[in-house]
Image (cartoon, rainbow, N blue to C red):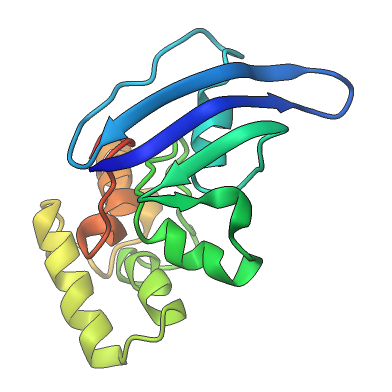
Length: 164
């Protein structure tokens, strides 16, 4: 089954900068893909389109059979639970503990504190950081910060295209 499909996708930013033009590809569920290219080639734009952080100027993007162009704003959080993206800057909150960084998406999703705690510990264990819950992200190495950033993905997400 196709997990991600881009059909003649283009993205033009205000001011005329064209980041993507006529991009078409498919990724099957469970397939790994590596997105490479020079600075400014459109790698981040492509990932942002997949997560609906941005919308294409033309073409269609599908994730898990859903046409993203037809999703209402309230449906976007459910889409993002299906796709795991690891950002270069880790997207961590440095005024919160490792535990709180991993727990935040679960709290937003409405998990009880007990269930969120169980999932946080399981996620941290899966990335080799169990026992570091009380530490501040600034105390961790870059690689450990990266693992905190992907720990919330350890639950129900599918994450086919982002290298998980």
